[in-house]
Amino acid sequence: MKIAIIGAGKVGYQLVESLTKENHDITVIDINQVILDKINDNFDALTIKGNGISSSLLKGMGIADCDLLIAVTNSDESNIVACITAKKIGVKTAIARVRNPEYVVELEFMRSNLGIDYIINPEHATANEIIRLLLNTHASYAEDFAKGQVRMSEILLEASSGLAGKQIKDINMPGGVIITAITRNGEVIIPNGFDYIMQNDTLYVMGEKNAVDSFAKTAGVRLVNNRVKNVMIIGGGKIGYYLAKGLERLDINVKLIEQDLERCRELAESLNNTLVLHGDGTDLTLLKAENTEGMDAFLAVTGYDEENLLVSLLAKQLGARKVIAKVSRSNYTSVLETIGIDNAVSPKLITASDILRIVRGGRIVSISLLIGGRAEVVEIIPQEDTPILNKPLKELDIPKGIIIGAILRNGKVIIPNGDSVIKSTDRVIVFTLDSHIEKVTRLFCKKGGGLRINELINSAKNAGDAASM
View (cartoon, helix red, strand yellow):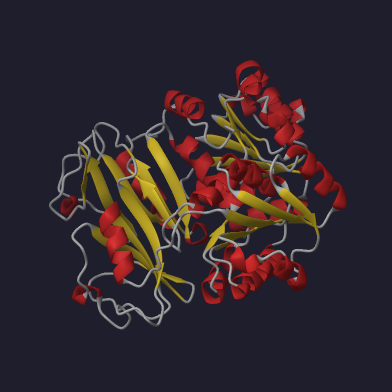
C-alpha cells in the first residue's frame, strides 16, 4: 500500500516505525529537515521537506496514486486542508488528526461535506482510555477483547507473590489462561514452560476474563473497588478538559489544578461541576491542602512527562488510591514499574493503534500497542482462503514471537493448543512482537495484499470511537 504521512512528530514517527515493518511504501512530508534525517537514518521511507498543504507538492509527489494520506501535524487546520486538497487531487482515503475541542462539533460535517474519511482526536481518545482504566477492577493495566470475554492483563510480580522463583510449568495455571510475554529489566521474553518467573517481572497474561482475574489474584495483583467518587486532575490542557467533561457525566467530583490563570478562567467557564484551582501541581503544600490522600484517583496529564512522573510519585506517597500518568516517552515505561504508578497512558500509542486498525482493513477489530510499542494485541477476523484457516496450528510456521492467545467461536472462548483449528467465522486474539506483524498479516490476510480499499473505507466510516464525543 502507498501511504503518505504529513507530519513527522511523535505520532508520525511511531506510524513510520510501525508501517515500514509491514513493507508499505511510505512517503513522509515535514518542514523539519532534522526530523526527516532521523527517519532516513532509521527507516526505509522516502522523505520530502515541504509544506503538506501545498497542492503543487502533493501533485509532484504523486498523491493521486496513494492509497492513503495521514495528516498528523501539530496544526488542526493544516491537517484538515491537507486532507481536503489531497482528496481533490485524487488520494483514495484521508485521515486527519483534529484536536481542538471547538472543532469537535464539526466532525460529522467534515466527514460528510469535506471528504475526510476518518478523523482522530488523540486527547479525547486518551481521556476515554484513562476513564476506562479508572473503572477497571485491577490496580494494573487490563483490556478486554472478543466482546468482553477475553482479557489481557499486565501483572507486576511483587516480593509477596508466591510465583517468583518458579518455572512456568510448575505453576498451577487456570485452564483458560496463557502467559504471552514477560518483561524483565527492559527485555521482552516470549516464555516457554521451562522459563523462570522472577520478582519484579511484568507478566502479560491472556485468557478467559474470569480465569485471568483469578490468576491475577493468585499472583498478588490488588483488585480495587472501582467505585470512584473523587478525582484530582493535574493539567488543564485538552486531555484535562476532556477528562473533566467525561467524569462530570459520570457524576464524579473533580478537582482540576492548572498553572495558567487564563486557562483556569476558560476551564471554569466551559466546565459545569469541576472545581478549577489555579496553582502548581508539583507544590506538595497545595496537594496536601486539597486532600490528595482522600482521592480515589489522581490523574497527571500535563504536557511534560517529567512533571507527570513527579506529581504522580508525590500523590502515591500522600496516599491517593489510584494514580495514572500521561507519558509520551516509551523509555519511561521501566521507571513507572519501579516507582509504583498504577497506570500510564501514551497518546501517541493510542493514536497509532487507531490509525493502524484503519490501515490494516475492516477485518481488524481492535489493536492495542503494549510495552512501549514493541508488542501488539490484535483482534482479527480471518479472511477467506488464508493460510491460518482449517489447519492445526502445529502445522503452521508460526514464529515464537507470535502467540494465538484466544479464539472466540459461537460465543465461547477457546484457549488454543497445537491441535486447534481456526475457522473463517472465528474472532482470533493474537499477541505479537512488532517485528512479526507482517507475518501475522500473511497468515490472516489474502496473498497479494490482504488489504482491500473498500474494507479500508468501510472501516474508516464505521470506526468512530476516537472522534466521537
